[in-house]
Amino acid sequence: MPARPPRPRTRKVSVTVESAARTAPAAVIVAIDGPSGTGKSSTSKAVAAKLGLSYLDTGAQYRAITWWMITNEIDTDDPAAIATAAAKPVIVSGTDPGAPTITVDGLDAAGPIRTQEVTAKVSAVSAVPEVRALITQLQRDIAAAAPAGIVVEGRDIGTTVLPDADLKVFLTASPEARAARRSGELKGVDVATTREALLKRDAADSGRKTSPLAKADDAVEVDTTELTLDQVIECVVTLIEEKRAAK
Ligand code: DC
Image 1 (cartoon, rainbow, N blue to C red):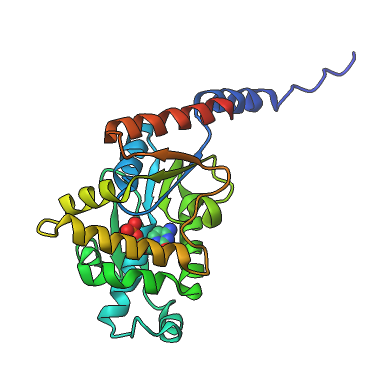
Image 2: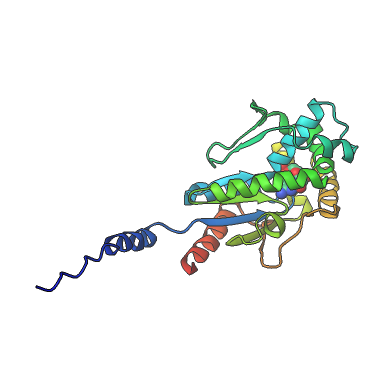
């Protein structure tokens, strides 16, 4: 009697894998860059929440390391001192878009990183190459671990941190619109003062040598000056859905 052919043991597994691939969308990596006051944070959080993605505020990480430098009395005008201390703080970012968190050495830093002192010093600290190398690696590790994908907002995400992102968006807005939005958030600071501080910080962030604020060649530029937040969110969600459909 001829021997029975062996059972196709791999068949069931391959069917399961194929159907899983059909139902679960592939992880999607979205980079959202632009200067301050263009709506990056509000847009990124809302888009991530809507699509079930993780969210990372990279500006908060640079603010966190700046806060650590200030509280540890490192001279923020001394790049060599900053470089020597850069690896000491342990920065942990929580990536739930509904409740993003940031801790430094186990301490909640969400409040302290938003002070005017940190805002005034963060450009100098974030320009130090050793700081950028450490924070960039941290950002890449977080993005790689996000189960469904992630929306990462910053200044150099599309150009340097995640150059292979599925979608890159560069948000812009007129200095007047940006200053009006920011001074609305910073109660008691007038629009003219906010505009001056924003432009000063943009110049420092765009002019630094290591991974400056810049639009990636393949980024979609969205001018938010005349758009409502809901319109910007809708626009980015549509761009992501188009990318997902093409994947
Ligand atoms: O987004 P924000 O205003 O909180 O960012 C604070 C500063 O951090 C900003 O002035 C420049 C710096 N930054 C950076 O250099 N690279 C990033 N990817 C994000 C922020």
